[in-house]
Length: 347
Ligand SMILES: NC(=O)N[C@@H](CC(=O)O)C(=O)O
Ligand SMILES: [Zn+2]
Ligand SMILES: [Zn+2]
Image 1 (cartoon, protein in one colour):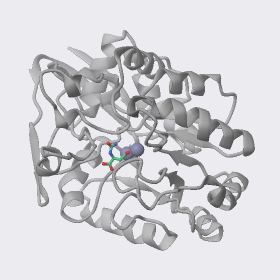
Image 2 (cartoon, protein in one colour; image 1 turned 180 degrees about the vertical axis):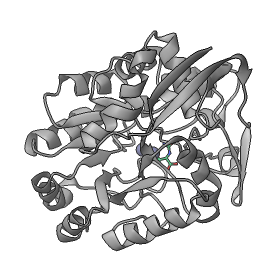
Image 3 (cartoon, protein in one colour; image 1 turned 90 degrees about the horizontal axis):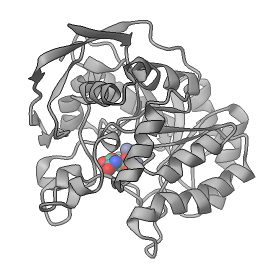
């Protein structure tokens, strides 16, 4: 029987939501991950240190009994964010990063940043105190094709920002293009990228061939096959600048299966199995631990988890529910479209 023992993974980009949805999904993360960077795009968003403290308490209260899990909190950057509040948040140990959503780029991002100049004061303070900026890297200009929005963001927003403020540590989140991978590889310092599970598995055909498949729709939208292959190469390379951020983003089915479906794919429950499959396919099982458990903490200046988990490769395919039931409604689980054999620690 084939087994693989690795340090317990962390998730460096996660949506837990709030209320009944939070209660319905958190166990899938805390069963599999020791820590996660928690996205602040609630309604209303988590903008102040006080908001983040209160949200953290709600997360801890929703944690299933016996689970240990550390939510790493972020603040949603606005043009009004107070640098002093951000600094206090970091110094108190509560805040791990600040999140930039270009206004209108994705779910609940209308309060995001329109004019980067207006955020420079906070960004300068973050550079000074060593607090990373996590970015949803897509422009929102209507003229720019949705498949080009990441590449155009790098050229017109990210690169100019990094030249203006080279001391700022930036995480390019959910990288979906070869352009993103190449940009990270070409950088010398202060840039890293997270990659989702689903972008290693699907390309845009999954969304569009044979009918519209809303459960494969997320943002940034999956791109063509050569981009997926570039992401696979980066994730399995062992390069410390790439690590897992699942971007598991639950929406109830009625909000996905409708005329204007929400963006987001739910993978917390089967991510570890999917990743073991991908890394095995790439002949890189020995690098899975770097991607899931070592590179992320190193980038965020945290120690890796001491606890180990053992994955077991079963002869017969293992199964996951097609949907999970939450108090907010059913949430469809990501279907990788191939049988899974690797069983996670508590699957
Ligand atoms: N990834 C998604 O498709 N959706 C995320 C937002 C985001 O990460 O951009 C969400 O909050 O639903
Ligand atoms: Zn995003
Ligand atoms: Zn996200």
